[in-house]
Each structure stands twice: as C-alpha cells, then as structure tokens.
Amino acid sequence: MPAGPIDPPARLLMGPGPITAYPRVLQAMSAQLVGQYDPFMTATMAETQALYRDVFVTGNEATLLVDGTSRAGIEAALVSLIAPGDRVLVPRFGRFGHLLVEIAERCGAEVHTIDVPWGQVFAPEQIEAAIRQVRPRVLAVVHGDTSTTVAQPLDELGAICRAYDVLFYCDTTASLGGNEFRTDAWGLDAVTAGLQKCLGGPSGSAPITLSERAVAVIESRKSIEAGIRGVGDPVRTDRIRSNYFDLGQILDYWGPKRLNHHTEATTMLYGARECARILLEEGIDASIARHRLHGDAMLAGVQGLGLAPFGDLAHRMTNVVGVAIPEGIEGDAVRAELLADYGIEIGTSFGPLHGKVWRIGTMGYNARRDAVLVTLAALEAVLRRHGLRLPTGGGTEAAIDSYGAAA
Ligand SMILES: *Cc1c(COP(=O)(O)O)cnc(C)c1O
Image (cartoon, rainbow, N blue to C red):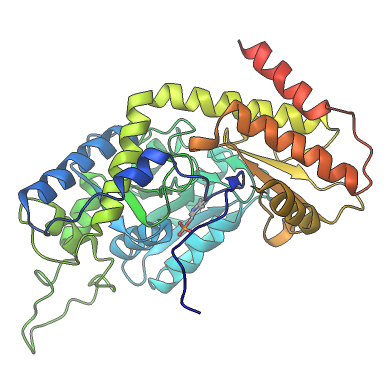
C-alpha cells in the first residue's frame, strides 16, 4: 500500500521537549524557497541574525544559525573553539553535561569534570576552585538541564573566566526564552540553543552567538578559505576538525563575504526567524514571566495531587517540573495511558532518574492555562485508574489557586 499523506494524531506535548509548535512557525515554514544568494534570502538571513542578537541579549556581530539540531550547535562551538590537547572543564549536573564531555573528548581535549548529584547546581566558588586547579582553555557548562529540571546560575561565572583567561561556553537550549539569560552581561563567549523548547519551534536549527574573543580564536585556526586547499598545501595542526561544523567557514558564509559553505536550510531559517519574532513580539521579560506563571501552576498542581517534586526548587527551571513517581506506580505505563487515552505526552527520565521521575514541561506554545489544567486533570484520572488515592480535583484546584495568587 502506498504511503498516504502525512497526518499526525492530535497531541499535547507536555514533556521536556520537543513541544507543540506555535502554529505561526509552521505557517512560516510552508513558505516557498528562494535561491541561496537571492537578495531576499541574504536579507532574511541578516534579519534573522538581528532577531537572535535580541534573543541572546547580545551585541555580538557573530550571531547566526547552525543547520542541525541543538547538538549541532554544541558540536560546532566546541570543535571550533577546542584544539587537540586543550584543557576543558565541564561542571556536570545532568545528562547534557555528559554530552559536553563526550563531544569535547572527540575534539581531542583533555577533559576535566566536577560533579554534583542530579537535581543540584554548583556554587560559583566550586567552579572557580576547579578553574584555578585545572587552568582550562574552555569552561563548558549547561544552563538549564532538562534532565534534572534545574538551572545553573551563570551570572558570576563570566568574571571568573575573564580573570583566568578562560573561554566561557554555554548550552542554553532548554532555558532560552523562558528563563533569564544574558549573553553579554554574564560574560559568555559562545552560546548555543535550539528551537524545540521555550522557543516553540521544531528541532533542526541551532542559533549560536560568539563573542569577539571566540571569533578571534576561530579565525586564528583557519587554514583554508571556502574549503579549497591545493594538493600539498600545508595543514595546520590545530585546524578545526570538522568541515560541516567549522564556524570559521560558517561565519564567512553568513558574513559579508558570503562564501559558499553548505546550502542554508531555508525552511528552518524561516522557522527560526518566526520563533524569534514571536518571542520578541511578546517581549523576553513577558515570556519569562509567562513561563514562570504556568510552571508555578504546574508545580502547585502536582503538589496538590500529593505528588513530590524532584530537584532543588530554589534553582528550578521555569519551564519543566520533575515529579517523583509514586511508590508502586509504573511510570512508563502511566505515560502510555496518558498518550493513548488523552493525547498528552509527558517525559520520562534518563540515567539515575529513569523510572523514578517524570518530567512535565510547560513551554513555548504550551505555557498556557488550559494546557496545564487539562494535563493535571488527565494525570489525576490515570493515576486513579492505577490505584493511587488522590485528593479529588486536587491538581486543578491547586493550579487555579496558584493562578489566583499570581493575579
Ligand atoms: C533538549 C536539550 C538539547 C537537545 O539537543 P538536540 O540535538 O536538539 O536533541 C540539548 N541540550 C539541552 C540542555 C537540552 O535540554
């Protein structure tokens, strides 16, 4: 039988991402293609760069999109900044810290790590002490780690990095747009993100911004222009060990030279541009406040059902709540039933938290009152069927009270 037209089921994506996309983003992504050097295309690229400077709260000229999921942005930043043998420090507090280690190792770095238990964050003094000991070239840290639902405070780390001449990289995929984030004020040198969390788009584009210091490092490692090297031409030993993720070439493609690298993913460009437009139209502070409002309501609702939240609530992300799976309840069976009977997806967890914690997101398009209340009502109904005794309407009542208290 030939495959029919695509027709996905109606879903409410209340997990840690991806989440239901803003309809406007999907509309933007159905626009027709233009050629790679069409004036409309280059103007749209320039517009998108300007929009993301505002999203990242930066004056960095070098602000652009890496084509690929968030991981592509991470890999582009690390492979372009790290030369083989460079020391890299990764403070790990969740799954994505492990990813930074893995990628930095593949870049040939000498990787050093410090750890806190999942659900906690580092004090700046802990990170400074490790920097003093390791003397890394790069500090690579995750901002909000959806795997543990907490966000590492970053505001004091930039000054520490300057004092020890360290490049400061951050993965802000899970937090950007829903939690406070300031590239320049916090002294960041490289920041990467993705669309499928608070920005409310599909995965497939990785916004990135680079300080002048980071650009200088990348420029210094350039050995070839536009990927054309004569046979027998010397190769630098510290040359960037990727072609696709060589930010030197990607910067030349987005910059005034417009040197050909890859073919920009036009449809993702349209989507990323619309995500930024939606965020900036609402206002970054208003968007953060909205994420906090609905995240607080979800947290109150979960507690109103008598369930225990996971992680250090003082550092919790606004946009995802961790929920300890009650004793005797099979977490994946509950998730499957929520999806099959209610069309609602919530998240499982990885590593040490697997089978112990659900993750419920309220982000982007789904940071909405109706999405919060419907999810809590459905969760109560499913848990009741699994034999749990719960306060009737305890989730929705507590959430509504939380909205009332905030009004
Ligand atoms: C969700 C998430 C990602 C996602 O990476 P993809 O390549 O888009 O799957 C990366 N980093 C963090 C911190 C995340 O929460």
